[in-house]
Length: 501
Figure (tube, rainbow, N blue to C red):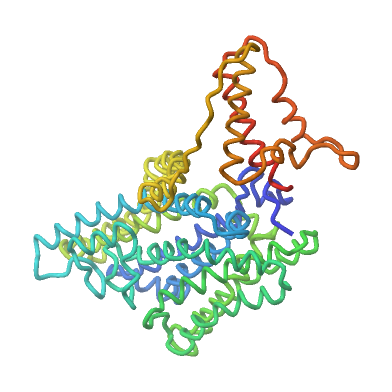
């Protein structure tokens, strides 16, 4: 059973027009704030370490927010595009999908990349021997790296994400772009898995998170060679399988009630697992990552409890700002950390210093809102308007490279008939159809009878009615108008009457 996009659950957790699952949009806000707090706890300001010590792994394990983003992306992308891309691999549909994702990723990313890139170049110019970024591995500033950053492939040839991106957090954007490029092929497999037993799909979703959970249990860390690739492929795939589980559920009140309970219990179990895991060793609590697909799937079905809270306008707005928040917080923190190094009073244990730290932390959502309203949304709308032209680019490129050649059709000369403009247009239309038939090696007479024509055993269909309408005589119509009508009729006949439906 597919997710009924126009329908709304009783709690209003699903919008009526776009198919957006509001609970998951709100969860994006939670994941983004978790990552922001994780990075801010590295601030060398008296009091920050103490607060982080009280909250413990609830803050210091905030890197898990990235994995939660990956699972969310897999679920939402499958929810939105699986029915379109799953039946078959089509160039136009694939281009449309990738263009939509590029319109979502690039505008704000390019803004942040160039503004922060200018900051890095300034630091490198003023202090060539010193570090240019607060990263364990310093990023390389050259033309080749710039081009890689520009097209979001900077991570693909590096086993570790440290130092791969100029803006430290954008390594995950590069990883997610790889997942988007692979999704049209993965959709072919996922679409054919949709009828598997729900227990198999649910088990597969959880099992995909086991490699990273094992890394936390064995190493206390998600960092090992090519760990970024494991994180994106497993997280994205787990989210997509979680969608297949939700897709197959019958949406009864009992199912929604159980999902609401699960959505309320899982966050508590995650928090408890993070706290108790520290008793076994640093970072061991990260094994709770296996519960992320369960949480996402439960919130997609639930209509009570946390789902209602995450579906409120505040969390929904935060979810829409989450991408911008994820991009801008590192540049803001880097400038602030640089100021802490150069200005002693900012690092002093004073009220003024702490007030500045709070202002910097609270400024991140404000800057994210600015980029959302002035850059992200306007750019996305304008770029999406170019989608029809972009979809035709592969065909035009193939013709330009002579991979495809347009076959000319010779039309016989047709003299104007005594019946006037309508008969002349009809004659030209018939001549064109005959030329197409000769080119295809088909009998023109066979094409004259549509496959949906009425018969003693089959009543006339709408398609037959449209075909008959071509022969009606129109009054006070110019020949160009009539020719356009016949062109549209030919498109209908070619696309529908002979489609065999």
